[in-house]
Image 1 (tube, rainbow, N blue to C red):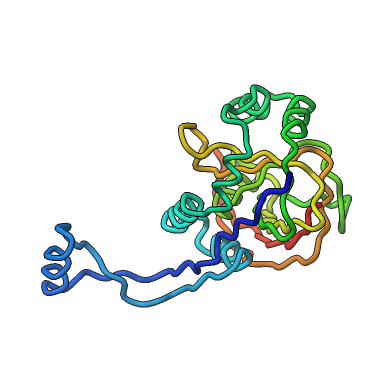
Image 2 (cartoon, rainbow, N blue to C red):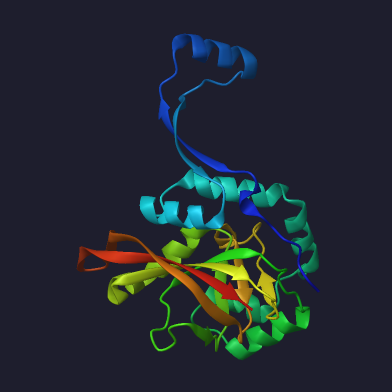
Amino acid sequence: MTLPLVNIFSTCYEVWSRREPTRDEMTKHFQKTGVMLSSVNDRLEERITNAFEAAKYSCTVGGADNRLEDFINSTLDSDASYKTWKARMPSKTPVALSKYQSQFPNFSPSKVDIEINNIGASLCEGQILFHGGLWPTANPNQFITDRPLSTSFCPQIALRNAEHRGKAYDANQIDLLVLRASTPKTNVFSFRRAGTRLGHENEVLFASGAILTLISRDLVRSDYPAAKDSAPEKQIKVYILTVDIT
C-alpha cells in the first residue's frame, strides 16, 4: 500500500512583519467580522515555497515561529491526500507503537517494526519529511537504520527533537535532515494528530532498515544557541542535510 503525496508547501508560507492597525482599519474589520483587529500585515519578510526553505527558515529563527506550525497543521487538516493517510492507518494505535510514543526510549524496536510492517504502508516517490539529529560520522555517504526512525512533517518539531535533553548541546552540532523518499521500500506509520498528547509532533515513524543516502550538506549558521540543564549556553553549528530515504 502506497500513501499518496502530501505536499505541505504546495501553497507557500509567508512571513510578515506586523504593525498596529489604524482606527479606520479597526472599524472596517469590526464591521465586517464582529472581531477586534489587534495587528495587520506590514512587510513581507519571507516566502517559503519548499521543504528546504522551510528547514533553513526554522534554523534561522530557532524553531520559534508558532504560525509556521499552525500553517502546517492547517494544511494537514485540509489535505485530501493526508485524509487518505489517516484512513489507511488503524483506527486505534497498536500497543507497541503507543508505548513507543508514550514511553520513549523505553520501547521494543522489534515489536514496533512488526506493527509497522503488518500495516504495510510505504511512502510515494518524492514525499518530504524532516528529522533532527546527527549524521553518523562512520558512514559519510550512506547508512542503514538499525532501529525505527522518527520523522515529522514539521521542520521545527524535528529541530526541537534534536535539542531535547541537551542532545545538540553535547554533540556541538545539529543536522536537520530534509528526507526525500526515493524508490521507497521501507514501511511507515503515521501517528494520530487528534486526541493524543503528542499529536502536535505530526510524527511519521519508519521501520528499521531504511537506507539513507546523503545528497548535500549546507551550513546554515554557526551561532545557534544550545542549552542544557545546569550548563552555560553556548553556540553550535547547524547543517541542513538533503537526504534520499529508501
